[in-house]
Image (cartoon, rainbow, N blue to C red; front, side):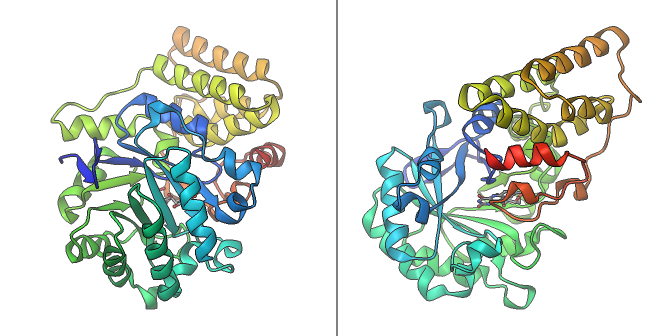
Length: 370
Ligand SMILES: Cc1cc2nc3c(=O)[nH]c(=O)nc-3n(C[C@H](O)[C@H](O)[C@H](O)COP(=O)(O)O)c2cc1C
């Protein structure tokens, strides 16, 4: 697969770190970008209500590092004037791309006409896109679900309308709003969208392996692929897919790489926030990341029960030292990531994540508060 262009911006490799509220913050994005293979990074979705009322949290969410470029700010909302103002604010902070969220299923977002609620009000979506387009000079992109419900799949209609409004890249998550994160993503609809418009289209949903990504590129002809939850289980997934796209053997991370990822993440978090929320975020990543480690279940428990920075660092050190000496840890099993491990209730509310891992309520609260 070749890189593709969003207006004059090359997305190379054609792989996008999909936005995840409560997950893809400044620390997580830099962690993943540094592993290689990410062609585009996107902020968490940012409320235009918050942005235009100068809410400090919303403004903080627009921060990015030069190494993240090209970088897109994603905004959500249902009110035209605030969406335009929010888009201008993103351009002002130097974002390369402005992305509009048309997929978030959370009731509190949909009720106000934002997120996937826009899929039910195409005249309002059309006005929002047209007005934003008139008022910014950076490229405008749109991230949609395939429809609100099974009986109202309208991704093709939305895509054609968006193209007419001047949207320069469509990102299609192959689920309906009603599905939430359940069931499988429908890549047939994604292919149909790709065939219906001439702007670049990227597909999204359930990519957790190199093979799945390569198959989807081939079967649907999409220009790019977005990966969200898969990046938490395997931060090297972008690099691995890119290796395969270049005809190389996918990179296999060493135990040392895995230790470095955990330590680096903690360091990035600690630079950015106090110890308690940083611990919460570490536990959030551990819930997914440890699935790929020998004795991951037992290691995860030690992380969940760490109550200070020193304790978490000691537990990481002990785990990798034990692996080094004995080549195994705990029950020696490597858990397979399953679909249910990757189920979440809603965007924008990480405290309501429903993973099979038992993150204690305290660390959930800490992660949610940060
Ligand atoms: C915890 C969580 C938060 C999310 N937040 C956002 C968001 O802020 N904006 C957005 O467009 N999509 C959001 N999504 C959807 C993802 O970007 C992606 O479309 C979806 O998870 C399917 O891709 P995946 O199977 O690779 O995870 C979120 C998903 C999760 C699991």
